[in-house]
Image 1 (spheres, rainbow, N blue to C red):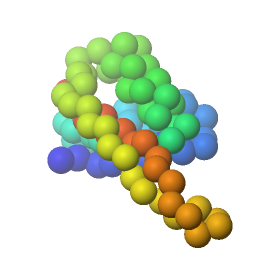
Image 2 (cartoon, one colour; image 1 turned 90 degrees about the horizontal axis):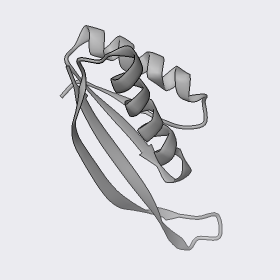
Image 3 (tube, helix red, strand yellow; image 1 turned 30 degrees about the vertical axis):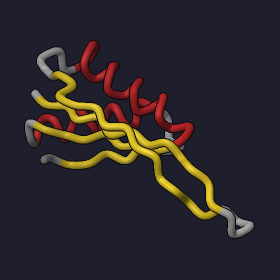
Image 4 (cartoon, helix red, strand yellow; image 1 turned 90 degrees about the vertical axis):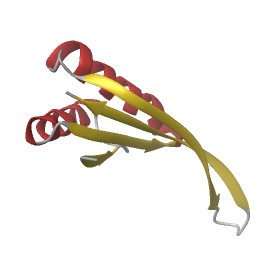
Length: 87
């Protein structure tokens, strides 16, 4: 597997640029996100695939639920996604 891009609070084009750079260095990259950043990860993959690297494809999508501890000591579930891309 290639490099992993973790999606967070930056603008989506920052992650698009990072993904494109990794796809030029290797033929595979993973885009990972949790919670509200999931939509940004999907946008990133689609922008790369449709606009900048048309010979790339989404080779797999995995969803999961992570259990995190909140500030008050309780547990909460947060959804996560991993999008595998390859050229």
